[in-house]
Length: 300
Image (cartoon, rainbow, N blue to C red; front, side):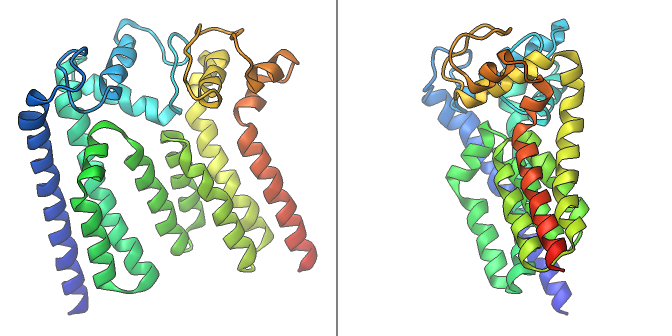
């Protein structure tokens, strides 16, 4: 009986989330955007933020055979770039289809999945059905959250981050690490979860190989995601890191050497291989994990 009630709650939450997002989409597209074109200088004068048209104008270059990172700058990690390219392809490289149909619909779809996953994860952590339901509901009805979903894909990285937590709680560490790696390769911010997971494994008397296995699986996902772009243009991938470290405030030439004082460029000029620079944060984390694993092994 309890399982049936939980299932009904989950179905209700899913249906309500879909309806809310569709209503927001209709309001944004047909009522707010035409009357309040806050970016009138852009094609369509849309309200979804300046980012979405910029995505299209940049990534639509691929329809002419140009390749991200190599031929034009990208400040997103590779899965984020691939996601945007996929939506450009589905929209048949049409600006209005991309901005007003595929981006919000796909983003809202992932937002609905995130609501469901929040419910399941909170329920697993605190065993409180009401808390899980109302927290998910709060996320669902938040106008700020839904508006952000219409113009960015941070929530997709959040989806993989929460999914990694879900698998972590279920003690499926390899799946958790893979999901965390996917989240990092969509947007960089989930990388901050990695040391928290490692510390939890260390504090809860996990075996030394588990402490190392988790970041290695995460790193492998990042390596495989970057590999195709890195083979085509290591300098271009490194330049994406330069954009990240400099905040992307000043866009300069797309080929190295790059003007300005960037630590990545300075190390590159000293002869440090670009592959090491690109994965430096992960290598530092892996070194710390190796230290913890050795310490754990010695204590055992």
